[in-house]
Amino acid sequence: MIAADKEIKAGNIVNLSGEMLTLRDNSAKMLAEMLENGENTGLQLEDSAVFFAAPTPGFEEGRMSLGPTTSARMAAFIPQLIEKGVKYFIGKGALPEEAKNAVIEGKAFYFQALGGTGAYYGSKVSSMELMLFEEFGPEAVYKVEVSDFPVIISIDSDGGIFF
Image (cartoon, rainbow, N blue to C red):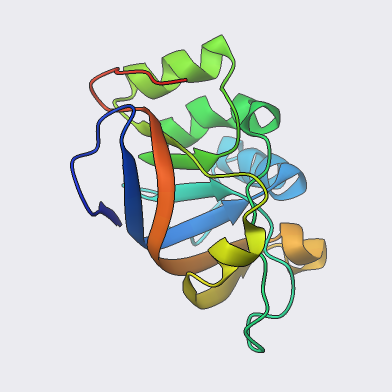
């Protein structure tokens, strides 16, 4: 579960702490298929956070990068993930209208991570665990624990929007 260092309202900059699941194009597609087929993913999605990112190798050596990817490419998966209980989405850039509406209707949150800060965000990761799709390398699903992870709140659970 994610915790913020102050009130989560659109337009605020907050520091997040807690666990996130990483998703990128291939892993999001495969996860969506598993969920559609009713397969057990082994993931705890209820009240979880998904970061649209692919960590680079080097966590053990302290040199991992974890930069956000463009959320618009991942937007098609947001409604299904909300249905499965995901509460927080972190990515880069604005969301298309359908995804934005799904976040608002699902009383979820969308945070924008800052582009070009992969090395900085990587330094905020205290643990990393491979969860699914090892064959995808950095695009696999990882569970990462972060602290003091700065983001901008773009959509809050009251439907407030800041883009």
